[in-house]
Amino acid sequence: STLKYKPFILHILKKSKIMELEKKSKIPEPIFILMVHDLLFSKTKRIQSKQHAWKDAIIKNRPRLEAELARLKIKHAVKSLDELIEDDDTPVRWFRTNLIKTNTDSLLREFSHLRKVNSIDEITNTGVIYHDEFIPNLFGIHPREKLTSTDAYKQGRVIIQDRASCFPAQILNPIPGKDKVIDACAAPGNKTTHLASLLNNSKRSIVAFERDNKRIDTIKMMVERAGGLDCITIHHADFTSTRPQDFKEITGMLVDPSCSGSGIFGRAFDEQDSTIDEDEAREKLNERLVKLSSFQCTIVKHALSFPNVRKVVYSTCSIHDEENEGVVRQLIEDEEVKKQGWKVSKRENVLPTWSRRGHPEVFKGYENAKELAEGCVRSLPKVDGGIGFFAVCFERKLDGDDDD
Ligand code: SAM
Image 1 (tube, rainbow, N blue to C red):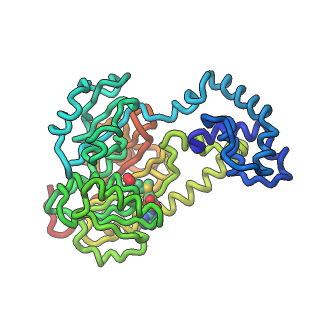
Image 2: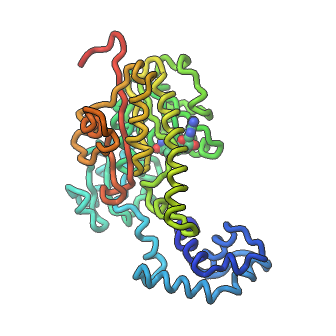
Image 3: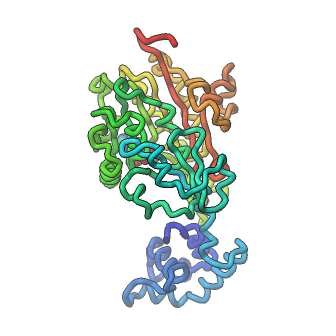
């Protein structure tokens, strides 16, 4: 709850100057944030701690904090606190059939109480369901529709996953019985389990890497819940330290590395740290984007170096060019990548009917700038029915491959 309200809490902290006023108390910023949350935003409006000097210091400032909250509500033209964060919710709740456990016909019978509609614009209230035209076996419902209390959800027959986040596995489109794939950055496991669904849960067809100590447990849980244990081998390791020669059987890869997350609601607001001014914020963001895009290039380049891989799908939930087309540009200019025969897949092989494509201006100077941009897919936060997202596919032919 604190994280949801964090941008507003930071605003109140700044405007009330409470951190300066209480400097002597030496209260760490996270404690300020938590306590102000409890005082202003929690149901009880009470700080959840025993008697403590920090608690007293904050309570002493209650009138000042309440006055700032009142101003904030006026500014956003809201009466209740819930309205402040309503904007953070997705316009459509997306879920896909988990083909490991059921099929779409059976699933639709479970949701037969919902009226079918033909576009996301018709999802204005509960009671309707939309079968997506871009991703097979994906459905959209109103975010207030009860989904997590259904048996279909509890028993793992459906998996909640944003539409655009389903693009990478769909673009890779691995063939069951033929392809073996790596998910290089796997936790929490949405795309890994989507791959398992597409691969009919074929035995040992997916290797998933995750380097984070905590997130490795999350992916293990998700894979178990989805029923993909036979199909997915999970490695708790840094993907960039793997030896490509050890994975000769791998034909395709997903690389969905850490990114700024600027396509996710709420976090975009987060980026605008309210304690610094606009120029400083832009400079900080630029520095961060340089670091992130350098890491993103390194990890995709590693993926491109596996000996028998024909397709690598790179994706982010960022809206920044630097992490998206900018990374693609750096990679296609890399001598090693060129030598390995990699090209950006054409639009006809990358969700051709999805209309929002990449930004051609980033490929300025290239004869085929438009074609390169058309090969990329983008989605805008909210406007396109979910999170902001980017995906591109690199492909190549190896000796002996058919030319079609
Ligand atoms: N693909 C995931 C999904 O759809 O559920 C989301 C992936 S998230 C954007 C990025 C993940 O990559 C994080 O869990 C992060 O810990 C992991 N990661 C980052 N660098 C990595 C590396 N070098 N090797 C393995 N995992 C890495």
